[in-house]
Length: 430
Image (cartoon, rainbow, N blue to C red; front, side, top):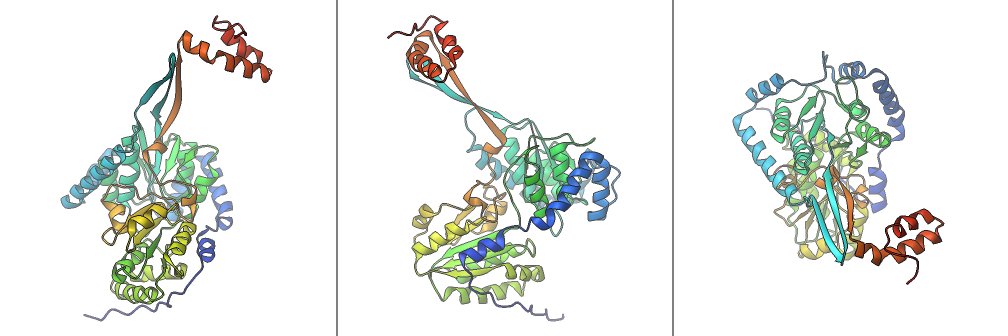
């Protein structure tokens, strides 16, 4: 057996927080015009445009974009039963966690005699999930998006994913409860779900990760559809001190590089010796991995930051606002309490990012590129909308009447005040 060739990877270097942030901002200018043309084509030509783009980008000739029940049944025959069972286990864990997030359908409280206030929560009726393809298939993303939507109570959940669709992804979509599957990827899939075509009825919200073309399409189509958040290339960050196990840190960082050459990772530490220890451990891993050549490309986007103390390291990490954050320090709960910006947080040496990717039940669809400063990760609230509720008795309206009438008159909206006084609860005099 031939000895595996050792990869030639330039040693990583120290970077600043500002450099990391600048590197993670998507170069949207270079893809914006391309995506605008794709959106316009889908809007005008519908399914015809989708089929043409699938042949152009994915090298697959489709007669139709919809996946049939027979195709899903055939997919089960191609997937090992053990994989099916573990997909079911993962789906159960995801459902269990997302059920814990569900608000009550409605709650009311009598805040004063005759004044009852509350909230009504209602699921969206139709949402679209984007499941990436390309370098790897992501049945786990199928579970994350669809199970979350179904747990939230959405009636119709559709999915778009590039052709050819891996049988495991089809099985995962079926286990998750997906109602419609379409063999369409890229910006054209986002356009189809947002605008509608002959085969694909438009949705209210689109969720799911994707490349920069997918992300740009979501951003450009926000006037037509709700989105979750910008979710681009995967990234990981580890906050650690001298107590961390370098091999554990290295494994979490390297794993993100498997997603593709645009993935990135950063180490933030107060131990100046840790970067070299982690680097050596990473090289041991990368040179043994089947996808080592892909992982090695992500090193160009990555680096480490050494801080004078842990307080500054935590402050720096909040500036980084990573998609995935591992905390491997002596007092992890103290560090956790000070973290403000992160998509998903993995606490302690035995909590690898892969646990959240596949099995713990938390959602792995997360904001990237520093957007964790503004957005939460995918959760059931994104599939529901709320209405305020108020119920007043005559006594309750009488209590509020002076405030209503006085402020309505002050704004010159006298008919507002009249809608109160006509009910005989207030004549303008105390």
